[in-house]
Length: 112
Image (tube, rainbow, N blue to C red; front, side, top):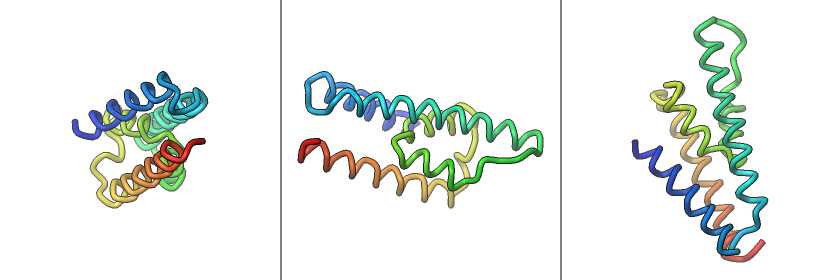
C-alpha cells in the first residue's frame, strides 16, 4: 500500500511539475511509457513463471525501473503479485528508485 501511494504521489507531483512548466512534457511522457513497458514486463514474467518458460532476467526488470519505469513496476509487482516479496530484489529495486528520483531532482532544481 505504501509503495502504491509513493508511486501515485510521485506521478501526481511529476504531472504538476510539467503542468506548471518546471519540467518539459517529454519527462512525463518518458515516465508513462516506461511505466507501461515495465508493467507489461512484470505481467509477462509472472505468466512465464507460472508456465515454466523463459523468464525476463531480474536485472532487466531492475533496469526498466531505473530508466523511469519504476511507477509501473510498482503497479506490476502489486497487480501480478510478482517480485514483491523477494527481499534481495526489493532492496535493489528501491535503491534504483532512489537513484532515479535523485537524477530527476538534479534536473528539476538545476533545470533541464
